[in-house]
Image (cartoon, rainbow, N blue to C red):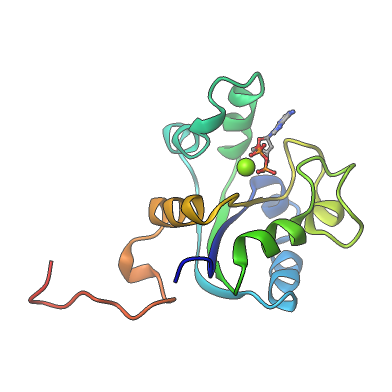
Length: 150
Ligand code: DAT
Ligand code: MG
């Protein structure tokens, strides 16, 4: 199934501003199937580990504080070419550089409060999906588990 899923987060600012519905509409209209979804409050240590690739960046601590400032919506999205197509749909990290019609152009308030996360590679889409969802919460493949299997 490589290449057919990406992972997204609707970030706290967008959740607080009642943008969950409009953002999910954009995602569905763009042809993505929602294969798993939940609303959760991240702990600081979870936010730090999710963004650990940025741990040495000057914005890291502020980013962690923002990500724990309220609940988020985490989702696995399914579509051919999911990672690249979703990055196109969300637009540039900096909303002032995002193309009109992209999710970040429409809903982001700043580089930090930029409405959504999107995986940057197939490998990270898998890792991020595994980080947030247990097997029984995912609906994009036939479950392999049964009583007799590990
Ligand atoms: P993206 O979310 O587009 O993949 P990224 O991986 O470079 O961008 O950064 C992760 C998040 O960190 C980004 O969504 C918002 C925050 N961020 C990135 N650059 C920043 C900056 N210069 N100032 C403040 N926050 C920043
Ligand atoms: Mg990134």
